[in-house]
Length: 318
Ligand code: CP
Image 1 (spheres, rainbow, N blue to C red):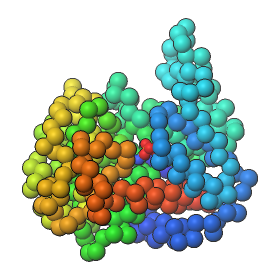
Image 2: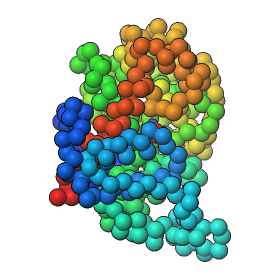
Image 3: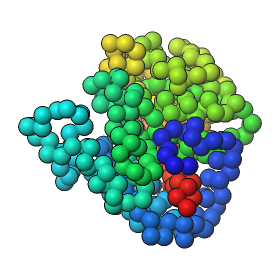
Image 4: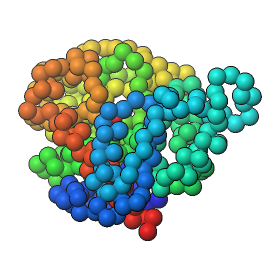
């Protein structure tokens, strides 16, 4: 593997899951693989899990790690070509990227959707420039349209907890006060489409996702109906995708919050969320604290997910 920007680049999902579980069982088996190799992690946006889990994964593989928060301490970067740089941006991405590439062997990039232009976001304006100009393997630590390391961790977590070959997995929109990107739900849908699980997406009218990601998922506008018989409930907020509403919060309808009453409609489902989560907006305290909540093991599997992907990229360098 050279670049990793989509869960589909894992190839055969069952093989990838088997590799991940082997990494989890023996996390220090590949310490020699990363020796004298440097990972540069570049953050255009905040992070807790991605930052720590990816760093831990690289350390498990014997790598050195450099972390750069672009908006804290680095020169402010211009991203558009042709701009007269007479404002507050001191450096252009077109110089910064190859410079960063010269200091490392692999680059991880976090760059969220900016909601200024749907076209720019869905063309992955920032991530694609790193792939084009860094000269290094690049992996996504959540980009504008996908969060594949999160999705891989989600699929590993489902694999570990499912009690039937084809569980029913329901991804439900839930309310949030801010406009959040579609990267996690897009990516989760893309990953679920690589399985043969029963997959349902439920959201209010107006929150339809890009059909290129939702694929074969059943779209159900009645949340209660969607939750019936679910084995896994994956909650997430996202801003509107369609038309002029792109990037907008259309409502904060708290009747969509995942509560104990909602979970009672399911087949004693496990609750999942990528975190960070707004309690009593997305999910009630009692659901996230219940024994059926997987949010902590799901976050812990971010190390496994990142380590499995980094290992594949390191093998591709040899
Ligand atoms: N789930 C996730 O990516 O968490 P962070 O934003 O804290 O990295």
